[in-house]
Every structure is written in C-alpha cells, then in structure tokens.
Image (tube, rainbow, N blue to C red):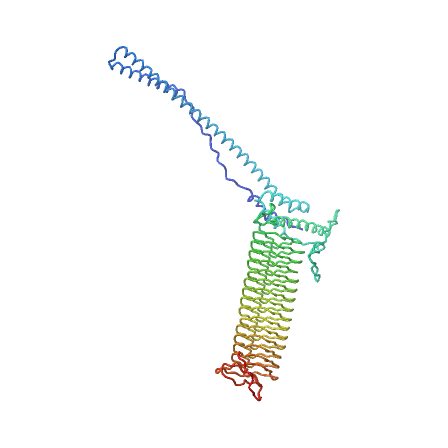
Length: 636
C-alpha cells in the first residue's frame, strides 16, 4: 500500500545535520604559585641584620673621627645605634609588606581559579544538557520518521504530530521536517474512488461562494475486523487519505504568517521550500500561505479543489505538468518570482486579481473549464498553444511585458475587454471558436493577429492600437466590429471577412492596408478617418459603405472589386486611384469632395468624374455623362 522506505531514506541523515555541533571549549589549568621557603625568610632577616650592623659600625667610626667632646661623642654614638635600629625595623617592615601583598595576590588567584572552575563546571553541565537534548531530539526525529513507514494509520498520524511539535520547538528542524512531509506526500498513492471530494462532476456548474462551505463530511472508517480481499485495501486507502490530509494541513498551518506579514505569527515557518513533485494532493488548501523559497509542484495531481487564494510565492513557483481535477483558485495570489504552468491541466481556474511580477508561463496548458484572469497583472506572459475549452476571461487585465498567445485555441468565449497590453501582443494563428471581445483594449506595443481565425463575432469596439497591428490573412467568419478603434498603422492584407465588418468612426493615424482583403458581408467604414495612405488594392467588397470617410493621404483602390459601393460624402485630400477597379453595380458618390491640386493624378470609380475648380479648392464628384452646373464650392 505504501513505500515506507522512501520517506525514511530521503531524510534519514537529517538528524545529524540538524544537531548543533559546538566547537570544544578550552579549560585553562589553574595558576599555581610556588610555596615560600623558610630559608628565604631567614636569609631576609640575616640580610637586614647585617645591613643594620654595617650601618652601626660605619656611623660609630664616623663619630669617633669627628673629634667631638666626650659628652658629644656619647650622644653621636647613641644616635648611630638608633639609626641602625631604624634600618633594621624598616627592612623588617618592607618584608612584612611584601608578605602581605603576596598573600593578597594568592587569595585573589585562588578566588579567580574557583570562579573558572565553577564556570567550567557549568559549561560542562550545559553542554551535557545540550548534548542530551540534541540526542533526545535526534532520537525523536528518527523515531517519528521511522513511524511514518508504519502499516498502522494511527501510528503514522502520531508521527506527523510528533514531527510538527518537534519542529515548532526546534527551529533548526523546521526545514528537515518540511522535507519529510513533502517526501511523504510524494510517495505513491491512489485515492479511494468513493472518497468525498470537492471536485465537481463534469457539466455541473460551480457553486456560488456562499454555498461552498456546505461540503460532504468524510465518512468514518468502518469499525470491526475487515474482511480479507479488496475491502482491506479500500479501508487502507481511506485511512491513508486522512493521514495525507493531516500532512497537508501541517504544512499549510505553518506557512501562514497571519494578518501582519511584517510581524508573522510564532507558528510561521520562514524560509521553507516545498518539493511536491509527482505528489498526489487532496483538497489542497494553501490559501493565505507565504512561501519564501522555491515551491515545486511539477507533475503533481490535485484531486478535489485546490485553493491558493491570496497566497504569496516569493521564489519560483513551478506547476509544470500539474493536473487539477477540481477548481483551482489563485485569486489575489502574488508570484514574485517566475511562475511556470507549462502543460498544466485545469478543470476550472480562477486567477482574478493575481499578480505575476516575474515571467508567467502557461505554454501548452489546457483549461477544460472556465479560466478567469480578470484584473490580473502580468509582467510577461506566455499562453502559446494553450487550449481554453470553457470561457476565457481576461477582462481589465494588465500585461506590462510581452503577452504571447500564439497558436492558442479558444473553444469558449474569449473576453479581453479593457485589457492593457504595454508590450508586444502576439495572437498569431490563434483560433477563436466562439465570440471574442477586445472591447476597449489598449495595445501600446506591436499587436499581431496574423492568421487568426474568428469563427464567431469579433468585437474590438473602442480599442486602441498605439503601434502597428497586423491582421494579415486573418479570417473573420462572424461579424467583425472595429467601430471607434484608433489605429496607428493597420495591416489587414489578405484578411477574409465572411460576416459584416464595421470600421465606422475608426481613426487610422498611420498607413492602413487592406490589400487583397475579402469582404463577403457588409463592410462599413462610415465616418472613418485615414490620416495617411489607405491601401485597398485588389480588395473584394460585397457591399462597401464609405459614407463620410475622410482620406487625408492617398487612397488606393486599384483592381478592387465592388458588388455595391457607397462613397457618400467622402473627402479625398490626397490622390485617389481606382484604376482597373470593378463595379458590378454603379457606385454612389453624392456629396463626395475632392481637393484640387495641379500635380494630382486621379482615376475615379467608373461613371464618376470631378468637376473643374481652381488649384487649392475643393470640388465634387459627379456622374458621367452629366450636365455640369457650377456647384457651390466650400473651403475645407
């Protein structure tokens, strides 16, 4: 049922590394002073006596030689005796003072030695206690790790709690204990098929948040002696499931810093990394957790719902190849390092208001349910070749770096309304099977939609393209709405519009290219503004409305084909070229104005010509043949 050796084998040696190894402490030997010999005292006394006698003899003789009267001589000799006695007394006093100082120094050394002995004894006792505590902790750690391989689920439960208590009391053991818990969760496990789970069956909509607390309670294990056969294995899997839930809870509880991240709770384990590669995780709840090191979930399997709401990953977050069977919620999550979800499989994913400071990679990811990234913030994001089976919503998201969706597939609705693309936006080869909304989106960098397929309606109303945008060879099967869009430079060469295409009130500040584009449905450019050259060479129109369009630059319609065309109120400030254009029905151009220049060479649509006017004035297009009268000429 389990692989006990894997858990123990991965971290068996951690007890030695966790133990603190203090360097040996040096003990200074006692300072011994030599004992004063009695001969020294005798020699000092003899020396003092000899000195006193010598002084007496010298002074006595000196008094005899002075030639003093007899009474004065006796007095001088008496003084000599006194001086000799004083010398003797002084020498004795000095020696006594020396002995006193020596005795005092000896006492001080003895006291210092006793203090050193006491300190050494205390250090030895502390070291002994530390060693005993370390051995006891190591023994508890090793025993708990060994108990994780027990066949009895109660023993495994107790081992997990013992490891939790040990790590909480001994910070040096927190990283090893976390590694042991991860190793346990990495061991092979097949959840029981009848176990309760938070995952939704296919086709069942997600419950509103207020109802999510009503979960089914886990059934109690059947009491009594189980019958032999598969029933024992099923019971064992139920019990192992509960053990694994406990291991997950321990990790989650100690990775939550509390409401104040600057002053984390005492139960928070900082600088703990996670390695849950290939792990089987059940109803995983890491909401509000903070992981300050690398978090690896590569190829892990999440059964039931997985919650990472408001989680913070300060290191790299690796979810490559992960499978989420239930809802995966990362609402308000923060990824400071790189976040990798390459080839991950999601049932339903919520990344609303998530923040990706590093690179976010979802290359080849599969979303079988709805994927929500509303108001998320990305630095650089890769969704290349990702598959969105349900609705994909990026409403009001922000991409501060490049956003790559090359070759992605959107089976459900795709919503990019209000999205801000500060870097390059790449949608080349993307397939939109349902409606796609880019309403009000802002593209600051280059935007590429070359070869995109829109099977349903495509809405770009009010979008802004500050740099070049390319829709070359794009296919619009449904209606395409670019009403009010602002283009810097737009390329729609060889694009195909099967449904209606609306560019009314669009503003083209750069060159607009629709060369060889095909408009099978209605094409509306009413009130659009072309500030630079506009190229419609070789384009095909079923019905084209250019009412009120303003061409400030040259307008090229050579070899274009019009089944029906309306150019009512159009203004051509630059050259207009309709050479070899084909009109199945006559074009209507009432009120179309032309700026007269001597150097302009115009070829108008079939059946229309410009009236004569002075250079620099505006004139009108009129049908041919026609009786020309002088129309009112308005200055621009």
